[in-house]
Image (cartoon, rainbow, N blue to C red; front, side):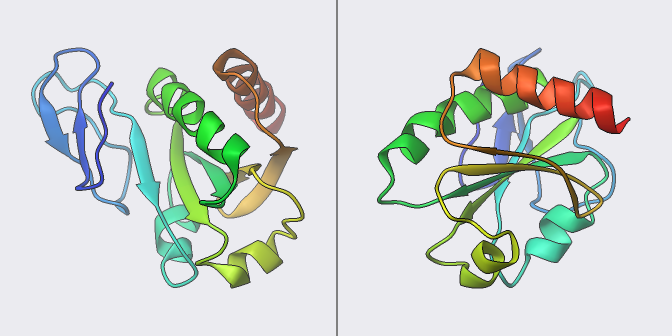
Length: 147
């Protein structure tokens, strides 16, 4: 279940490393076994439209801050959900201190704030930290309602 800042992801099925760009058409698949890959990346004011709004799968946006303890606690749970729902969601992390326009656009009043986007439109919103099973249920319920 590996992801690192250089844009490489370890396939959960076969263990092979794959490069995954921040923005691309479609959804990433393993070059070896063709399984869907977890798509986890970062975005900010300058590249959010390209990275998040133009993505084909639903986008789970994590609006967080480095000084926020609950944000650091929920991050691994969100990554776990991204791996479990590989091919269905893309996780995009946004540091609100570095991206004030996005923070203002999405009216962030508390962090972490989680959004589920479909083609750039907010379909669901959640504020606060939660364990991975609860986060996954929220995402799956939101996907079912918006489908």
